[in-house]
Image (cartoon, rainbow, N blue to C red; front, side, top):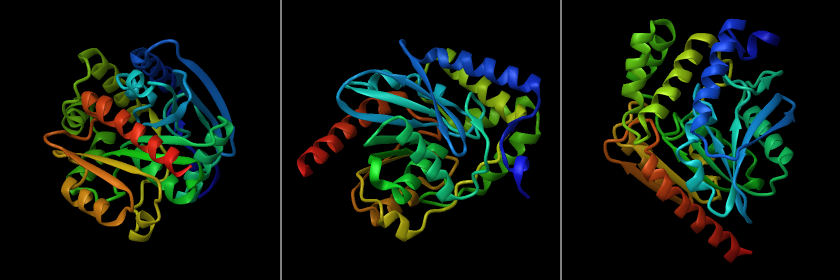
Length: 299
């Protein structure tokens, strides 16, 4: 199979209208002023949302599947202390990026992001990813490490531990059953994040519209080999929800600590697959400062 069958797409024109309306509503959680840029790549046009200024190493945010950069709204201001934050609207996801070529492999995924980072003029960047975006960030550090200053990954699926069978069944059912089941499944998956009710509802609406009206044709995240994890030279912060329905958090933590040369890990008691706002707003900026200090010392 080739061509358009391997390119993500909206299910219909009406679905596109509904999803983009939900996308715009969810992006209202971002602070202003927010700039939008489009970067041309061999896989399509990539929309990037930019906030903040400063001389610090920029941060590139990589969202989870069917989530869009809106999910970073409660975190952007905290991450932008003294630096620019750039949230990538991933090609092949429901949003304003446009996919024009298939992305079938880990190498193709990394090549796309390398083109985005180069197109943004970033010599070095901290990659911060959630869920699928966390896998993308770790994959980048393996395959195109030259621009990667550090990696932060929250609950990256399959990168460190197998998926739980219940998660797989719930994900499949979520795409075929009605909204009532989908909403209940999402709520249990994400758990408490500490975001406002309005932000949670806007993000849930976007995810629900995307599940019903967008055909994702991206590479499902493969497991990462021991050798791949050992090869990651950049500093890494791995955070895992202690109550995650995606994988066994303790098993994932143990593997990260055993294999990664420069890793910090944290299992958040009671947290689910959703990012705890207060934790990220404190822990990640501190890690970025630590990584920058290490880069300066080595230079």
